[in-house]
Length: 355
Ligand SMILES: Cc1cc2nc3c(=O)[nH]c(=O)nc-3n(C[C@H](O)[C@H](O)[C@H](O)COP(=O)(O)O)c2cc1C
Image (cartoon, rainbow, N blue to C red; front, side, top):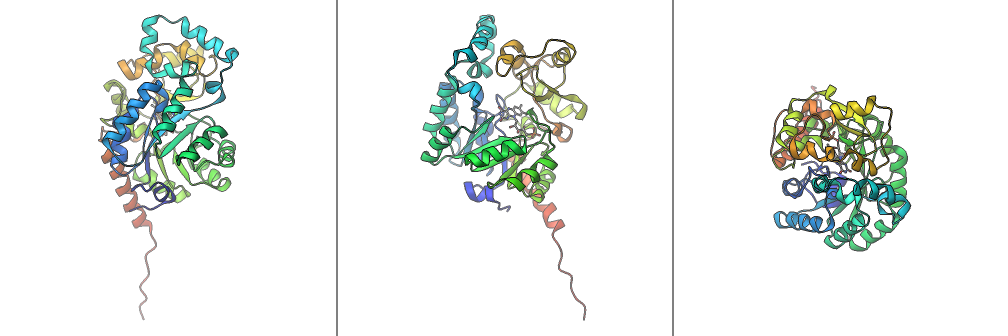
């Protein structure tokens, strides 16, 4: 049994969280991880408010254990400023209606007011934890505190970790550049201890963790648990086309790239024709979130259709370590068992004295 500040704070069995991956982490995955004793996180950003409400209800119908929901609340998404939304509206409006329907996963990020609707749904549903990426607005923390919801901040730098700690979050997820999805510059091995040195709340390590070796290493760095994304793509409960999952199993270090071409922000994803075309072109991407509309259906054809040539498929460097599709609950249990065995092996043995 691995008891940490994370397991004690949330009353969960294992210090293993599944990441709130947009599209990939729907109710099936989040519920399976929480039911296995970890902390499952719903990728809340990809749902319009009504769909988000149903998805959370689905998790609650499958488990009564704590779970989390991920939201993105940067000013660029919560502002009502028409100047900010104008270009997004224009790009979105210019899309073919069929394409727009296809873009279900990013509709909420491209629709003014949808993120505010997500916030209302989440505050009403009161998950154990809300994980915020790209900012920790004070008003939201206050609302959560009033309802007894814990707030975690997912950060990729020491500066952002400090800001989140000062804002009063309960947990910090420090995500190294190995991670799939939007990612920063520092490696997990250096970022986690650097963040721990700077902040008050318990720190969870993210990026590059796929098994018990990673969990044991994260605990050795001083982390209170791990947050794993890529490993859970390769589970039957994860949403995603079989070709995407197969590519995770077959892929290696050289297959990922850092690209701004899908969202406008730095993202680690599978390298393909689309990402190469943007690397070679002279036109830079639009800002976040407008680039999603520029990228059009490519941001969905990876997950939905398994389009390996152009489709967006965020993935981390742990794809090198992932070789099989495994039920999410088994991933949680195997990770913990392996870490326990490693830590037992490394524990100092008492030397018997011979007289
Ligand atoms: C397919 C995919 C989608 C992701 N979507 C999100 C997201 O919507 N919000 C978020 O905060 N992080 C997202 N991430 C990043 C994860 O939360 C997590 O930090 C990362 O996967 C951890 O690194 P790992 O992939 O090496 O396990 C995503 C990652 C992947 C692989």
